[in-house]
Image (cartoon, rainbow, N blue to C red; front, side, top):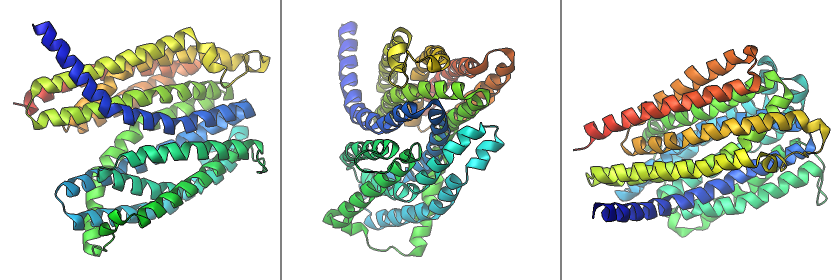
Length: 453
């Protein structure tokens, strides 16, 4: 009887979790595919272009996750006030979010435009930095529309209209891939810009989507109720709320993504081949990590609902079933890395070209190590989701700082002169992930006992 009941609970909880997570997984994979195809295009230009793209992509991604994390507070606050039917406060959050985005635009643009000397300061190859500079200049013009669309999407999501995110992703991807490809290789009567074409392609794509979504937002009568100007004092209070809620989220995202930026910088100091092989590895790493990240978001929602019902068993079901699915998916991914590395590498590089021999050898080894990292990352992500559902975000932030910046990065850096080269930081990351799992299991058990019942 217990087995039957457990099977029913597993089936019903699985269904609910997957219904929550699948739209998030779909949207995430669609958006991540832009970076995936950009890497494929860069690899077909040259190894140096892929290495330069790695530097630019990680800086841009790190910058954007800080901004996205901070502005994601708009969703939280709008949802709260929407539930309370407080339209005045919703308007305050909307205007405060736009104000914050406007204030951050110029510094972000200037930072991207002038990053080349920073790369040189951190010991990057001068040839690679020279290639990266026009890419940075083009990408700088994507900041303004990117920030605007982020505010609008977060606002609409807070109103419960989450399908808009998926529609945006579906429209954005083909537009972005078209302009990236066409401007890089001079197709469809467009100029041949090489690596800079990705930056300008991104800028054009963001301007098109941002303009289109802004028109939709302005012409849709259901949003006009929130246009009423709430007054500067109310905007100031809402801005303070956004920063209080959003900055810790932005910092958490920055800690994890920033680590992989630091990894890319370290690889660039080793050699352009190491940087290119690492970028290829991370290309697949992030594509598949989106699945576990989306599952973690689903776990957060389910745990939050269970806490609201004061149901400890449901909390455990959501957490452990989430760990099961995340780990099962990453086991399949690991098998793919281990058994078919050449198939993955061949997407970016010609396996029969002697010039690619070093990169291909490095990429095979790094993919094998990345498989282990993702196997241990899966339960860590799931536990992150559970703890966030239990309203514990400080310990997860502490854990990320500890395992990535205090353990993995220093160990990886120290390992380089001892013959580990590009492999050292991946071995250090495996160790860090294992430590992170044990810390989060301990905190999860402690939190459930003290938070509930």
